[in-house]
Amino acid sequence: MIEDLAIILDGRPLTFYPLGKPGFHGGTELYVQKLAHGLAGLGHTLHIITNDLEHEEQRGPTEWWWGAHNHPTHADVVMAVSTLETISDLVAPVLVFLPNGIDPPLFGRGHMVDAVACFSQNHIDLMCRLRPELPAARCHITGLGVDLDEYPWPPAPFIPGRMLYANDPARGLLPTLNIFERVKTKVPEATLHITYDFDRQFAQHQWGARCMSEILWECKGRIEADDAIVSVGGLTHDRLVGEERACDVYAYPSDPPNTGSQIHGMAQIELAAAGAPLVLSDIEAFPEVFGAAAKLLPVVGSLRKQAGPTDLERVDAQDWADVVIAIMRDDKTRQAMSKRSRALAEKHTWGHVVERFQTMLQGLAAERLEAIA
Image (cartoon, one colour):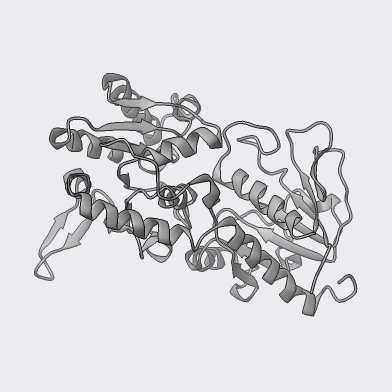
C-alpha cells in the first residue's frame, strides 16, 4: 500500500482561466483542483504549481499551492497537466501525464511518461493515433467527476422551460439558439441562460477573418435581441451549480470545431447530478459516457438514414426542439430521465476519480516505486 507520496502537480500550462485564485474555472482547472484535494485527503503530500499565485498557500494538512517561480522541484511523482513543456525543472522517478486533449505537446519527452490519465476510451483511441509515443498500454481511464454534496437529492424545483448553455460557444451555441427559438413556439415561458463567459470568447474572436467570428457575431445579435435569453457570464462554481439545478431540460447539440473536443463532458456530468434530462449529440465520448442516461441525437445538419439505405434526411434544429418539447410537456418522461441522470452521476464522482488515480499509482508501485513506497 502506497502512503504519503510527495506529488508535484504542475498546472503552469493553464493560463486562460485562474487555477489558484477564485473566479470562473474551466473544466481542466476544476479537475486539477478536485484531484489535488482528493489525493491530499488520502494522505499524499500535494504541491500544486500555478501561474496565478505569488506566494505559497497551505490549503490543508498536506496540500500546498505554489507560484510559478517559487516551488519544490523534487518529489516522488510529477503530474504534468496538458503539456510536457514546463517539467524541465522538476525531478521525480515517476511521471504521470494528464492531457486534456488528443494532440498534447510532448516536446520530445513522451518516452519519459510512465502513465497517462485519460477521460474516456474515446480519449485514448483518438490520442494514441496522433501520439504513438503514448501507447495505449500506458493509458488509464480515470475520467472526470462531480461532487454530489453540491447537488442535494431529491433536487430543488427546476424552472419550467429553463434551458442552459454551459459550454464553449464554439461547440454548439448557434444551434442551441436555433433549437431554443423553436422550443419557444410551443413553450412560451421557455428561457435560455448562457453561463459560459461568452463576452470573453467574443472579444477574442470578434475581429477574426474566419467563420468563428461570423458565428459569434450572429450569436451576439440573437442574444441581445431576445429578452428570454440571458448571458450571465463566467460564474463562480457555486453560482453555476444554482443555474444547473434550475435547468428543466439540458439540450447540448455539441458540434465542436476540432476533433477531440468532447472526449468527456464535465458540464454534462454536473447537469446529470442536478437531475436534468440530458439531450446530447451522439459524438465522440458522449455515447460511451452518457449513453445510459441521455437521449442521443445526430449533430444538427448531419444526414441520417431512414427506411431505405438511400433514404436520407438532414437533421435540423426542429428535430432537437421536438425532443426537448416532448420532455418538458411530459412530467412522467422528465422524471424518468431525471432519475437516470442522477444514477449515472453517482458512478462518476470525484471520489471515484481519485480512487482510480490511487489504483494507477498502486500499479506503478510494482514497477517503479519500490524504493520510495
